Length: 350
Image (cartoon, rainbow, N blue to C red):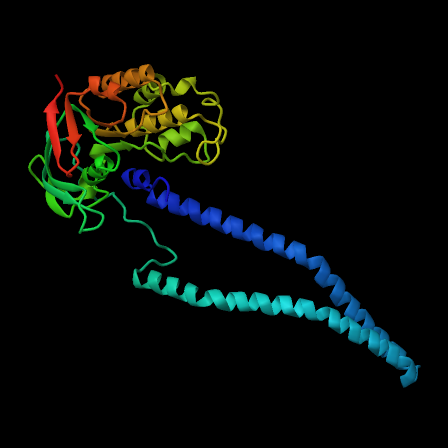
């Protein structure tokens, strides 16, 4: 599912689920109405025709002989033959319904086993004791592979210090993004631990520390402003206005207009969509911001300006930048270099 990482990081499961249910029922309702409208005239005419013929026979039988009624009966028979296709269509529909019943029962059984009833709601974060700051994140002896027989990360040991910037370098497919998913808590490591200030936390407890901007962000069919807010609470209007200005959102046409931009932001350029995603990630004032190829649709000067502005708005932020563009390296303190054997090497940028 597109955007699943952002949905989980921003705790939007319930919102997206509710939107899906509304859209699904709306689509199905329209589908049923269209089907009825398409079939209704034909059915009505055929039924009225049969009723007319039956009534005609009844009336004629009072005054006519059998020989005279036979042509009328023949006509009735032809009419019945015309009804056969309708009957066939009905039985075909019933067969389709019977065909999906086993799958439906299986899904409902699974939902009942998991207590996912009609009033199901995702777990609330209201009672979570969030960690709101940190000094260092330590990765100890991490191993990971999507298949346990084939590891892409081997014995990873890293220290990420608050207020430092890290540039992750390596060939495609070597596990750069995967390592970030593990840090974010989206994937559990096969081996090893992630410690924050020398303590292991649950994913829910450290969720507020992080923000994440992927290469292709989730853009909803809503206004630009609502895509930035993304169901988050705006507690500091002045800070929000600063984000809009420094990330360049106010330069996007239609920002001030409350118009829908289409699923996936069809009326926006790639760079504009990436600016929206970056602005969205900053609203929660994260302590650690992961930028996963988040500038690839922007030119180098725009990238440099955005990194500078991010550090200006969030002076104590820790940046983790994944990019194939070496220009991003100049704004970082350390390089995390991914080797071909699955290990990594961290070194200062001279």
